[in-house]
Image 1 (spheres, rainbow, N blue to C red):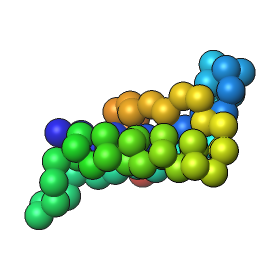
Image 2: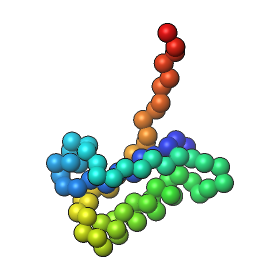
Image 3: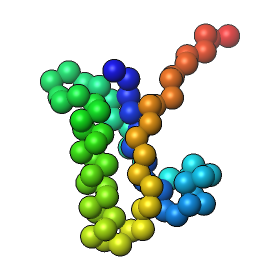
Length: 74
């Protein structure tokens, strides 16, 4: 599976403009639980943290990380 990015947004405007207040990339690593399970656990933790600390995160998303393309040296 590929890498996933978990992002938290404050308000509608930030969500539509894709300007996150929090962002973390999770990578698929050997010896750890699947990346999707860790992303879901982080999403739940962020929701609880937002509620507890009144951070105001209204949208928490899990998206695939953009593919890294290497340009050949010139």
